[in-house]
Length: 368
Image (cartoon, rainbow, N blue to C red; front, side):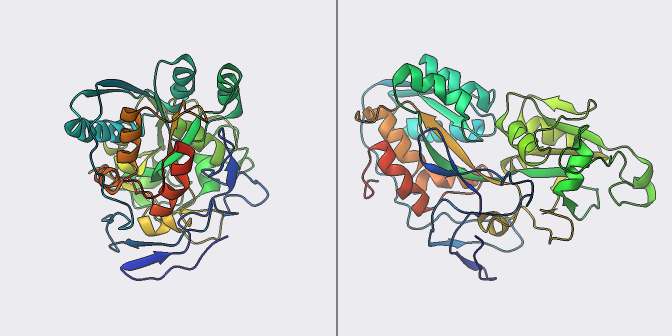
């Protein structure tokens, strides 16, 4: 389902995402990163819920105001506590910034952040090593089933930010658009999505002149990364990367390598956009319109690699969160927390997304 938008600086979105709804570990319909229907590749199918929001977007820039309906966080004194977060590298810096801002309000709360990849979140929650599990993709059944077997309930998840999984090239690269099919031909050696054609040089991708003769340098995330998994699923159709792809342990590292290599291409979260690179507009299928990574394209579901970023926690269904965890979660989902999201280069959740998340956390909708 795709909704019309108003092409103005004040952009009202009837529904911010056009992802396929997918049942994740807590039994709630969440937005999958991408439609996996290969007969209709990358097409928007459904959404999580109909959301009426008002966002201020500055056209031509990445400036973005937080949903004014999100409440300002009201600090509540809590006792001493230690909270550990283990999971997503994509969310790593953002979780650290949330933790730093929150602990200034509650100095007796210490929050440690370990961000080696989304795949590290489920076992850390299972073993009780962490209380928070940030993930840049939904948890898979093989990850939450051991948790459910051990505890008797699913881990609870909620969206905390919105990301355009960006395809980065060097700032001097003139490529104007790529299709998902072309990305498969560039990155994959199995070509499950595209059916066999190999794109090895920039001439194969459509560039001429000096660019034409140069091989494409490939950079991506390692297999611990949820960003890696999302890209493999959505772009490679669960295929395999080319052997020459240089895996990086961090999201920032991918972008740094592309900035330093004129003929490189890589993928990473939009929050890691920096000088020296640019993001490539993408088309879902050949002949479709190309869409950039702007907030407008992402919230509308037009940019093909749009996704939610999540936090997972271990919360028994009938047991309230302890006060330090409760207040930290409320901070993340508040206007103050989402201002930090924007500062980190990601796109904020909406008031409606927050409202959907709160009942699962045992928090009233009017709580701030």
